[in-house]
Length: 331
Image 1 (cartoon, one colour):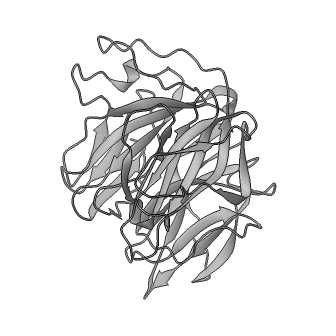
Image 2: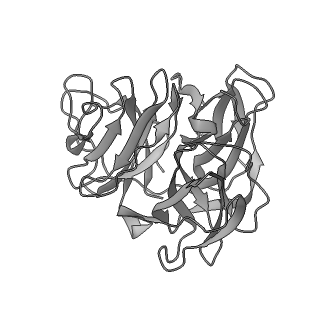
């Protein structure tokens, strides 16, 4: 799978209240992403973090005409996939200077296993307050997983799951979210669209995954047994796992905190759940472990799929920044 994990690096953000280009690290010597990442990089895994309150946030390719800038809640985070150009640039919208963004990984064009769209395609179903089949066979041929974004101004209920699944908590709200979810062999996934007044939670397809991964029809519950501590989770039973795809869902109407990391990592990616849904792409250690932390055990954390090993291309030489601090597993 041409997803590669990278140690969390803060990126230099654009000015607030406008779309702007992100192309370099924040810290000196402000290395350009094109000088840091392989030449065949087609997308990035980034993690925006909200400010003190609700703030506008958006991600897009530099040539995109998309303009989704829905709210993310205070101090919330989510791992997101965004298509980049040949210079490894993308565009970011932040509602204030308090919103920050981090590089967590990158995606290459190896084996053409991942397809990313410059402009998203809306696939919002007609039925309200119900699960609906989303047929993506024409848009995402051969897909095993769907890369998506959700936006709605009301902060009403939504969720996504594999076709035929009984997983998901459709009582969980959220104005803006990103994720990856499995589909069946006919490229059908399910989406729950809540609506408040006339404002639905709209579904947008950002791309898809074709191979070197697997997705669960029904998710595996990996919620820790206690809140407030990093808890080991043994995923070694998942064949060929190198990246865990993790979905967190908080109790509706609550503010809960979630983090996920590779075992052995000393970073603290522990923030508020993004409008009651957060998605994470987490490298496992050599023994197949990750760590999960929640503020309370009422917050559900689920393994929804895995990405498998594919020998990586070489990283670009990162100037004077020294070791690029690639995490232990390439995916």
